[in-house]
Length: 154
Image (tube, rainbow, N blue to C red):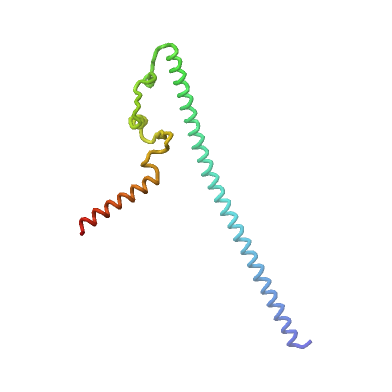
């Protein structure tokens, strides 16, 4: 072997060692990034767990309140039933059947208060809540407005 071949071989080996070093450093950086990513995911999972546990606690407290309200309402209903059976009425919220009842659906809805469900009869929802009626009314309204504007500007 000549001196040039020896020098070329040594340069090649040095370059190979440099490349292996770069690969090793890149692998180390990737591993470090994976560890950081796993750490961030673990922190996010802990935060999510804390958030869900707070939500669970709130829902359990709500369930307890609802349960207590249901117990109170059952007790009140039992007391009202007992009072009705004995023939006496003792309580502000108890009324005889038919007292204050009206056949007017608007009056009944007003008595139930805002946010209460509206009774839907056998014919379906009222005409003002049916989309085909609303579209027809819009068409008729725009037609009338167009006729009025035509008369004004002619």
